[in-house]
Image (cartoon, rainbow, N blue to C red; front, side):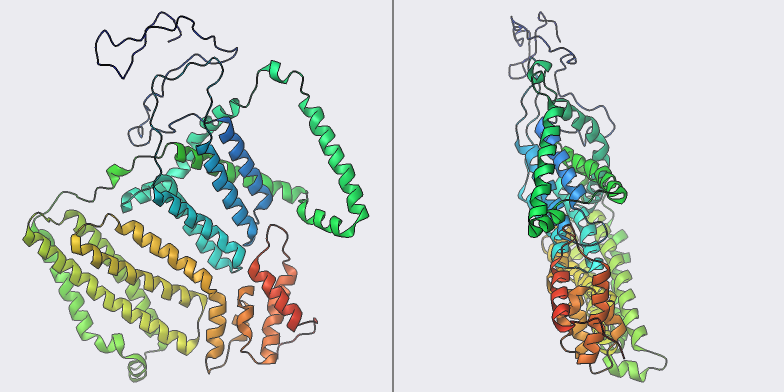
Length: 540
């Protein structure tokens, strides 16, 4: 391709001998050390090339700089041992880096030939931006709430929403495959980012008169000398400078290296996926090989009869409430509630699997097939909803009797989400087209989790248990996060002093720095400093 006598093919002209572009009479010279001109991009020869060809354009210098900058921000901002504002700062820095990597145009290298084949730019739908905003919102929970269990749930969910923002996917299969794509993209991004880093190199003549090392040394020396003088002259400035300047020791260096080794591949893989997302549309097909009407209707019809018989016989069990528990020998509230929970978990999960299989293999060509499909699957989903309502009733009864805990609250939220998914299944059965169902179900779960974070679950637990007439478990209240401190006003003074003392001791042993600042912990410190001024608290 470097021979100027070789004529090139023009894809815009009709095929034939005339489809030849005259060679450039003045071929451009390659700069020293530049690899031979390779026109492309060429189709990938990898096994996954048909589904994921890779980045649609080479990585530019701006991409490399943006990814490196976001990695440094993550290293100095992330508090690995707690929820804090550093997680939000890292998420925002990563988002800005991905925007810069996509928005900044790439300039061709001097003397490099233009590619003969270009791929069209990848269009980003509104749903990708919505999933990206959900990811940032989930990271932002760590700035507001200090409950570690809640923030871990948000981080786990953020990995799913980030994968949806990068890879898309409509069906369960494509979403599951897309969830694994960032791992492989991290490896494929290494040569891609190396190409972008190579663009940072300037010709020797451009930097011959610039002594970079000397410039950096003088800058550091000036900042160090004048910063030390200002710090010694004013105590307030010294305190602010000590908070803003990261401490450097061996544990800090190890933490920085660890975060860089995780953040750099993650951000690089995300930028690579944004430049060339995989084509998962072939996995979105929900229509499989159809079976005979008898082959699917009989098993599911029998299953519907079994569900109906269970609901009819167990009406007293499902909705008997306190009377059923008290009148049944050997039955306790714990067994009553746990039975409903496991009933919901297994029955609902298996029902959703059965519904997905039926949607794939049940024929719907004729009106009779569609009517049978709606009747059988609608009855199955409706009967499962009855079990969902029973489980929610049982958990509510259990919490009113024995108090609310984090696990019980989380179980109730999961049960409500399962019920919502079943309602979505019933809605999808109206038109028998449910390509939107997996994404809407996931979006509902994300919104439910964000709503739970906004409601402050630890405070809800404290207030619910204090409002009960039974004896309050002060030891359990003392294990709640500082988010629960505003909800302790209903306790008597001695009990409140005991719980505040336990939480205040934990806050004293785990002080926050600039990376771990958290609104929930800050409010708790203010309340404890106001209502518990001295260390002489005690628990009776």
